[in-house]
Amino acid sequence: MSYDHRMRRRASDYAAAAVFLILFAIGGLVTTLLSPRESAALRLWASTNVASLQHHPVLALVLSAFLPSGSPLAWLAPIALTMFGANRAVGTARLALICAAGHLIGTGVSEGIVAYRLDHGSLPPAWSHIPDVGPSYVVVSAIVVAVMFGTWLTRVTALAVFAVLVFVSHIFAGLTSLHVTAVGHLTAIVTAAALGLVLAVRQRGVRAGPDGMTPARGHRAQVLTEAVSKVCELANSHRPQSADRRSEAPATKFNESTSPTWPWSRTDSCAGLCQSSGRLRRGRWPGAIGPVGAPFPHEGRDISGRTGHFAARLVSVFPRIMP
Image (cartoon, rainbow, N blue to C red; front, side, top):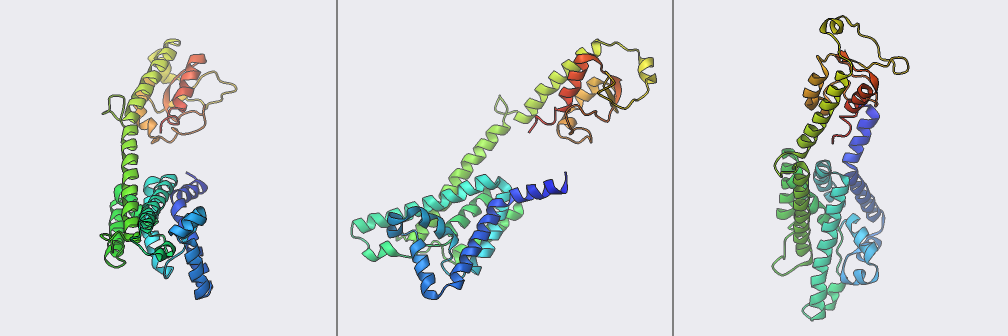
C-alpha cells in the first residue's frame, strides 16, 4: 500500500469528525471575534427555537450545531474524543447520518413539545425565543456510536466524556419537567441507538450466508474455490505431462506476447493452489493482488491454451472480487 493510498484512507476514516471539528472551531472563532451583543444576536438568530424554526428552519438547524452556547474551547475536546473514534468505527457516511438524525430528531421532539405547551398556554410566550445552540446533540449521538461499535479504548473514552456531560454539564437537568435540552439529549441518544441497532443487524446479515449461520465471505470463497478447481482440472486435462518432464522443465519468465504458456511457481499443482485459496483470498501471498493477467510467483505446472489462460486470469482476479 503506497503512502498516498494510506493517507487517503486515513482521511476518509476521519472525514466526518474532522469536518465537524473544523466547522465548529470556525463558529467558535466567529463568536469570539464579535462583540458580546453581536454574538448573542447571532446565537439567538441561529437557535433552533420555535420562532426560528418557523421563519428559517434550515439555516437554524444547520448553524445551531456549529455555534457554542458558551466558551468554544469547552466543546473541542469532547468532539475530538468521541467523533474520531466513532468515525473510524462506522465510517464517514454512517456517522454523518446518525449524528445528523440525532441532531434533527432531538431538536424536532424537544421544540415540538415546547410548541405544544405554548399553544396550550402552559408556557409563557417568551419560550418561543429561547437560545438553543450547541453541538451537544451531535456529540451524544457520536458517543452512542463509539460505545456500540468502537474499540475498548474508544468506548472507555466515550463513556468518560458522557460521564462529564452528565455530572458536570448536567445535560439531563430538568428532564422530569420536559426541559428543552434534556429532552433533546435523550431523544438524540435514543435515535442514535436505534440507528446503530439497525446498522448492527444489517452488518450481521451481510456476514451471514444463505443458511443464516455460515459467514457469507466463507460461502462465497468456497463457491469460487470450487469453480477455480474445476477450471484448473479441465485445463490440466488438455495437456498431460509426465512427472519427469515437469521436474526437468526450466522456470521461464512470463511473456504474454510471445509465450502461450502460463508458468506458475512455488505451488505443487493447480489443485494445491485451489486448496490454498483461503490464503490467496486474504491476499497474504505477495503476488495475490496485482493486475489482471500478471503471473503469480509460484512454481509448478504450466497451463497452456485458451482454457489455461482463462483459468490463470480467473485466479488472478480471485482476490479482487472478494470483499
